[in-house]
Image (cartoon, rainbow, N blue to C red; front, side):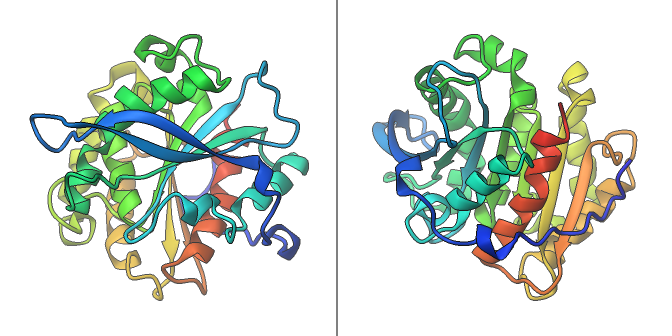
Length: 289
């Protein structure tokens, strides 16, 4: 078993440069404003990364990524981001299998409250994004519906940075039966309170335990790779206490389920997210056949 505190891996410098833009394309889907009872419909754009040698008739693991405050999917897959080239390089080196990345957004034209949007994002994900995306792209889901997602959950991960990490914890609470791996980066769980991972770490850990156990058999096969920068990262003082409290509940959050990574020398920015993804993706995909 791996130790709870997992050291971050530093990507080779050659991985950290903008890559071939042809690997990233927009994806339009229909969704709704799930923060209000009237659920007003609108269209939304995600960005999709496809791996080298992409085969429309193949089958691929899929990573859904959600950004942080003040950003958009361009933060991950825009022309200035090294992530597409880093993924190309990792796949070429055999560190992860060929995978699809769908970079999504919690932004909502009807609701300016980022916290409210992140709390509600799981509705959009499971009801709109996943069915539309996995109907259009070749994943392991035998059908783009709940039963198909449950059967293929080991081939699906959800991750997010900063506010997106808060959304990631909420998705874990609501969709563990359809997604087996979670990468909350530089952000704690706000289920009980804003920054509750720091102010109420033990209560937050117990809450997450209850939510995980509510999924029955699905709770036996899942993993969380949670990480941040070190003291330079404003999120670290809230995330680390939560993770330490979760470690005290090993029957649910044992070392086969929970990985914690602190990127020494890094703060609250894309550089940290890249190193967390470089470290975490081989664990949640390559390391969990």
